[in-house]
Image (cartoon, rainbow, N blue to C red; front, side, top):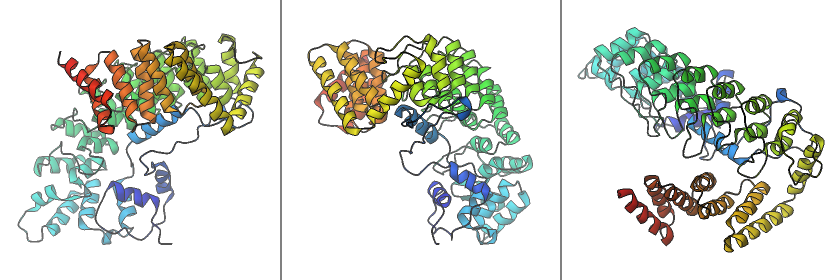
Length: 522
């Protein structure tokens, strides 16, 4: 077959070069392992089927549960998107891209491999060959030579480069310790050192002027990068050198990133520096505790709870643990005071979620502390599980689902028209219980909260709506209205500006944008 491997396509996309791809190469187990971990090229990553851990308890009986709540899958996709594309050592990466015969590689590729291994003699030798006319000089050629966006310093600190190689490149060649590479990932030498887990090189860079406050376009710093990778010793060094433990990016704080990857030791180190354990990422409402639940990391959940994480925050951590079948997390959260009688944003109680998605043990844990739910006729452990099974069977009939959802939406719309906003919100909540994936229903309920003067709930629903319908202008309108109610005029301007771009003919949005602009000036 002349098909190119998926890993080669991923690498070619990530490190572009106007050269034809080589003939296909068989993948070693090492490469297969990393290839399987690569995200799909689609902008919207396909969710994985979530199954509660078998060690957590016996799964509830058939029928098979439907996919877990969509918001969990969206957040998993966001977390995956936040991770770096590749963790393959440079020589292995070039082998995939260029073939196994190194002699056929461009000299620039061999140059970077020499830097990766810290082979200064080989570096100089290739540099002299690249300087064909002998005019540039050895050191200037070493400094100027790049391949696929990386220079010798990026390769040296990200690989097995010895300190002698770093000294040569920084002190003799005078390479910039803060120069970004020009690959799509856009990394600094410090971040390359994190990738290679090269603590001596990272310390050397810091000692020679590397800036640990440099931010990527998404706001990530080298501490975010190290936390995501779980580089515990590097995290310790960066914090000792003054890195901001609460620094926020689009993906959250370093604590969010360590938690979402389940890096227990790194979470522990970060907690020793007293970060904000309840920090919320505005774009997705994720807290460190929610991030730990997304990674199904019971140790991280326990560490965060011990550090004072709010177990009754906006994310309803108990409902999330129940929906994932995380029995030990359910125990931990209940012991910490999580409210078992608080429904999630779609009106589902933790015990109902446990009956559908979790284990029988989860239902048994929640049963003594949960008040009877009016819709469950037989309030017993078996009765709750059977009720959930029957309800899911009914909702597998698409006609039944659509009829029930349409009926609830109609009742909600009628109540809204009568200005009975509380009843309207309840009908929309019931509709979301039938179809949790309906982002536009969240916008309808957000409108109720606006009328009831609850800006925070309006913002939460509008934010979830925007995540599910990112190109829908009304989602931005609802977020803008909620931010106006909360008097956050600067963020309201940003949100409404994006909405006007999506729907230039929307007079209501345009008017609200200019109103927010005026209020922002005061």
